[in-house]
Figure 1 (tube, rainbow, N blue to C red):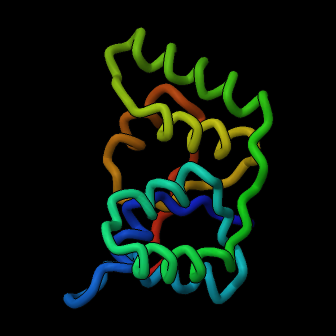
Figure 2: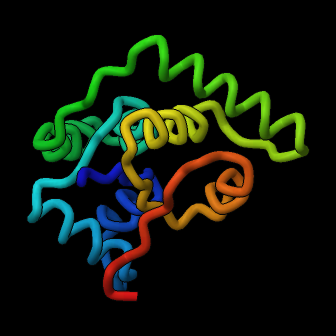
Length: 135
């Protein structure tokens, strides 16, 4: 089964120095197994904020190993429904988070994330949050 890896895990993996969490270990395992499902909005979040063009180009080239899956209208309509449902229950989130949730549900793929917001979304949405196998 493929897994959608959220930006926070990718960012930690690309950060220089320091020890890496079990989430990064899981990311590396998923890469080795060919089980990563990239989507364009996660790719954009990973690359946003990189000031040096050379670094951005280098990272962008590394990420080319993970092709984006196209997002159809159904993903965006589902994301809007999820946004509206969560908001009506007092749970705020970003548009990108709800796109990730919609992809997860429609494609039946878990999300590997350290972001606690997804635990809140999970109270209302049928998303699956992947746990690192080394935990």
